[in-house]
Structures are given as C-alpha cells and as structure tokens.
View: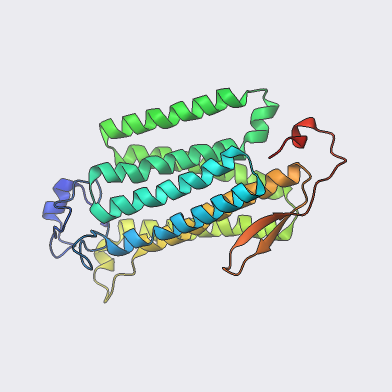
Length: 283
C-alpha cells in the first residue's frame, strides 16, 4: 500500500521509519511512497516536489502565448489554474501538511471546471445559456467544493469529484478530436490523451504497489513521473482547444513546433468571408 492516513503511518511497515524534518510531523491525509526528507531537511518529498516545476514552467509559457495571441479570458484562466496547481502541489509534497494538501487538490478541481467551460462552450451557446450564468454556476461549484473539502477532509470525495470532472472533459475532447482534420492538431490531442493515460497508470502503480516498490534497489518515483506526464497533458489540452476555437472562427490556425520541443499555435490570418458576427469580435 502506497498511501497512509495519519493513524496508519504510525504502524506502517513499508517505510523504515517516519522521519520528521523542518515541517514536523505530517498532518496531510495521505503520504506517498517516496521516503520523507530523504534528500533535504526542508523538503518532505523531494522528487514529488520539484517535479511540479513543469506545471509552472509550461503554465507560464502557455499563458504568455495565450496573451500574445489575444485569446479569450477563459484560456488565460486555464493556464493560471495550471500554474496554481503546480505551486499548490509543490507546497503539499514539500511539507505534507493538510492545509497545503488542499492547496493542491482544490486547484485541480478548479482547473477541471474551467476546462468544462472551454470544451463545452459551443454547447453552452447553442443551449441559449448566458456566459455569466454558466460562469457563476461553475464558480459556485468550485467554492462549494473548497468549503466541503476543507470541512470533511475526504480523499474519496476529492477523487470522485476530480475523476468525474476529468471524465466529462475527456468525452468533450474526444468529440472535438473527431471534428478536427489537421494532423498536427490531432497529434497534440493524442499527446494529451497518451500522457494522461501513462501518468494515471504510474499514479495507480505508486498508489497500490508501494510495498513492492520499496523492495526494489531504487524507488522509480512513480508519483513524480505522474506530475511530469500530467504537466505535458495540462499544456497540450488547452493548446488543442485553442486550435479548435481558432478553427471555428476561421482564423487559419497552425500548430508549429518550438526549439523546446513543444507545440504552440500561430495565426496565419483572418477569413473575411465569415458571416457570424460573434466571430468578428476580438478573441
């Protein structure tokens, strides 16, 4: 078993000892397979902490590109949420304190709520719902989750909510994938799915096979790899949806590579023949 409650940690035999560093005894509801304070007195789970840098780096890069290309505010918020999630996760794994665990898990749910608004934006408009109403409902849902999660402190509650929202997002992404013809855009979508699946498999392995993992000559750091794969997915998902949005607006988007091995979007031009007045607004 890879994770422990605070009571189980006292009796756990899969770790040689519960080590307390700068942040003291862990108060978080979960403690991952990586040994605590192995590399630094100030960082509880070293690799699980620094692996979150990818969320922050790709989030900042995605936000800068989003602002440069003039995308709508919802895409700005998506990358901001990715950055906040990375910072919150680093705080959680770096300290193993309960308050910081919620700084990790709550932004994850908020990121999914923003994703739902982006992915299902066309369906929202076709249903005749106002943006203000939908945003208000999603914002209220995010606030309610944060309050309930802070009060009841349930891992199962978080996992069910996050998993359900991720499933809803994935279904919408698959629908958009079938409608997109550009091979590079489709490749970005496949990268999103591939990285999510690989990351989730590593997360499950680290979660359920810690006893076996700790018998190995070295710890493969499955949870840190989960962060890396999900960091890439958290970048490629919004980029794919940006392509979908630009393609709908006849902006002739193109997916291009960068010197860093990342894909990004450039806009070739505007199709003046478009007749939808909504598409003539600035992104």
